[in-house]
Each structure stands twice: as C-alpha cells, then as structure tokens.
Image (tube, rainbow, N blue to C red):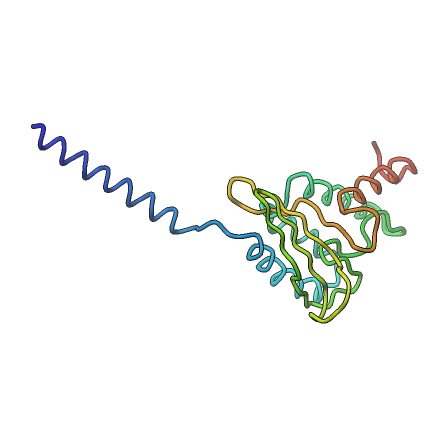
Length: 178
C-alpha cells in the first residue's frame, strides 16, 4: 500500500513538473529590446501608410502593451479631438515616432534596461540620421513589458505631461467639459 502511494505521488510530481516546464518554455520572458523592436516593426510602417491617428489604433489593438494611465490619457485626447472638426485640440503629431510625417523606418539606437524599467531610444528614418526623435519609457509588470511614456529630445515635455497639459488647456478654454 505504501509502495503504491509512493509510486502514485512520484507520477503526480513528474506530471506537474513536466506541465510547469512546458508552460514556462512556451513563453520565455521577452527582453525590452525585443519587445520594442517587435512593436515598431509593426507600428512604423502602419504609421507611414495610414497617415491618420495610428497611435489611437495601436492603443485599441494592443492595449496590454501600454500602461493604463498612458492608454487612458490617449483615449481622452482622441475623444476630445473627435468632438471638434474645426480646430486641433489634441495631438497633431505621431507621439510614438515624434513625427508629423512618419517615414515607415526607424532605428533602435540604445536600450537601457534596469530591473523593471527600460528606456529605448530610437530615430525615425535611416540609421545614419543624427538626433534622437523619441525615447520610449517602459515598465515590466507581471513579466511583460509595456510602454509607460515617451520622451522627446527636442521638447521640454514628455508625452504624459503634454497630454495632461492639453487636457487642462481644453478644460480652461471650454473645448472639453469637466
């Protein structure tokens, strides 16, 4: 009886350990560079061909790839812009590429990963172009990377600050109801 119980427990342990190893092998943790590279390989050509508000589409199609705070701020900005056709009250450039006319190409120049945070600097266009268009700021939550903010080399504000400022301006001038 004890031998039968021991064999059953060993078989159960082997089954559970095999299942766990297969589960962890199925989805290895992705490094920040790979995550950013994959996103921009999809996003940059879409932004170049769409000529619309591709960042809104990205947030809708890939919500898990953005922090809730960033996604909600972009959604509020989009809703405010949709309410008016005679004025620009929201973003008037692609915030993920820092461009009004995205080229469809990008170069990932530098990635700094430290613990659960990461910054990835990229330029839109050819690799030999000087300057930094945007630095994506990412956070890792439950083992998955997501975009939390975007910093611009030629601006004083980052995307979250810019979205908050535009929302405050809309409230102040009455283009957005409180």
